Image 1 (cartoon, helix red, strand yellow):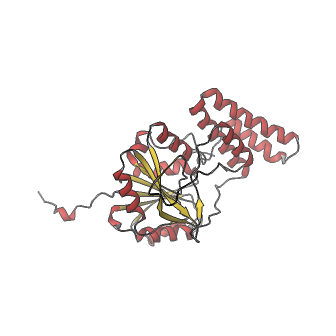
Image 2 (cartoon, rainbow, N blue to C red):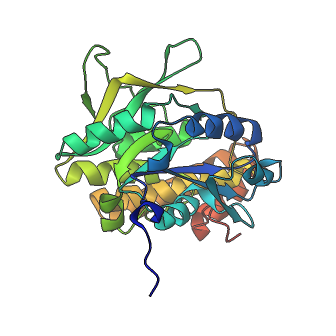
Image 3 (cartoon, rainbow, N blue to C red):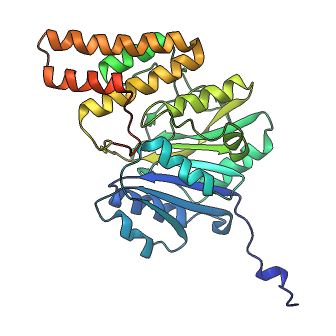
Length: 304
C-alpha cells in the first residue's frame, strides 16, 4: 500500500466564494484578481457560475486557473445558478459575492474569523462602499407585504435603509444584499439551499428571513469594507419577463409569511394591476405580456 505524506494532502478550504456572473467579463476579472490576493489564499475556494454569458467571461478560466468555473448553457436566473454553485462548495462558510465587488487581501479572513467567534451569528457582511469610500449600499428592514407590493409596482426595491453606526465593531442587520454576504454553509444546507420557486428576485430576502426566524443574527462589520463598482447588468429577457418574475417571487415570499391565500391575493392583484394599466393604454403590449406571464407563473430559471 502506498502511503500519502501528510504534507501532500490538500487541505479543505475554509471559505467558498460564490460568484454568479453574466456578461460581466471586465468586472469579473477585477473581482477575481482581488480574490487572488487573499491571505491565506489556500483557505479560499473560488466558484464562478457563468450564467450563460455571451461575452468573454467563459474564457477567464485560463487567466484564473485556481478558480472553478461552472458554465451554464443559458441564463438560469440567480437562484438556480447560486444553488448549483453552493451545492459544490467545500468550505464551511459560503461567501456570496457580486462580480462588481473588489475586496482587500484580508477581507475574507476577517469575515470568517468574526463569524467563527460568534456562535449566535449565521452570517456577516462588510460595509459596501463606492470607489470614493462612501457607503454604496446599506442593509434594509425586511420587507412586508405592503412594501413588496410598492416595490413591485415601481420596479425598484427601494426599502428604507437601516441606520448604521460606522464606529461600531459589529451591527445587527436584517436584510443585507448578496453583493457580499458570508453565511455558514451548514445553515444554507439545512434550509435545503435557496428555494427555487424564486427566479431572479427575492431569494435574498428569503435567506435573511430564515436566519431571523431561527433566532439567529446577521452582523455587519463596518470596519471591513468592500468596494462595489458600478454595475448596470440586467437579467436577460424583456421587461415583462423580469417584472413577472418579481411578482411570482413576491407571491412566494408572501405566502410563506402570511399563508397561501395572501400570496395568491398578491399574485392576482399584480395580474389585475397589469390588466388595468393595459386598459388605460399604458404600454398595453407590455402589460398584456406581463399579465400572461404572471398568470402562468413564469419565472426566470432557464425553463423558457
